[in-house]
Image (cartoon, rainbow, N blue to C red; front, side, top):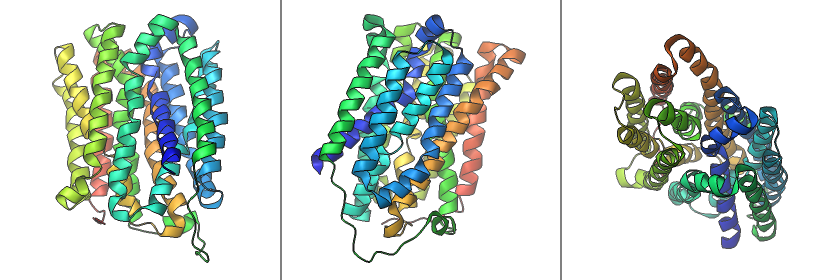
Length: 391
């Protein structure tokens, strides 16, 4: 089981990589395929949309078929096949299709891991295990930053992505061989998604899931690269450094948020403080923008650190789930998390284009980041009504 979980974690590391690597590939895709910022925003948004929409069938599959078959089949065909298509793409449209396939393929990996944790370990340590899993897997974010920029310069973007397609297929095969499905108690009651949606305690947490991941994912996955290039004149190596710093901060944030509920005796308070801190930082990029590249990188690092609240939010929701609906429950929470990120990614491209047309490119980023901040504030206003619970 340990080896199986290790392969699932590696699979989610690749999921983190695939959702963020467009930021570094943007210059190459623009030069070779004529892909615009809008094209890449659309492709990134559809990755998240595909990932989110797959959570409902993935939840059913986890509760019915188990994590081994669910994760290995989708990861091999979707993520591996999508990466292969990406490497051979000739148009921005092919990039979009490839990203949709990769999103479908990556959709079951983390939830399979969480399903095993929820079925195998005590509820009290779920948040810590969730945080450690996302923290370790966030190495994919690091991999998609400066190392990715180096590989693209040395080998070319097509060759680099093709190599990742092969690695993805190997990991999928490892999941199929090594993962063991947790046993289910005999006579366990049945249930459906409607039973979860009828639980009032879940709804404020679902709203928090919708807004908590979107800003960090949107900035790291797409907007940090053009911002530092357009506003501060950063070149590829500096873009790699900026994305690496934010990625490292997100890793640290995931580890910090994991056990924090046991340290402070609350899940709700750290979630509120962290996310409102992200909103304040995003607003500062509009109201008091940094004058240097180093200052901008520092702000993005803090956004990554405070914006890594995903594990503790999903742990808060997990505390209300009945055991027989564990698969459907964690995937419902993840649907809102990834769905929020997808909506923000997908909509941010047209919003930025409209702002740039009226204000100019460099002046359009501030209002865009302010929009991210507004979404967080509205979501936290609803989350204030959530019932706190610590296992």
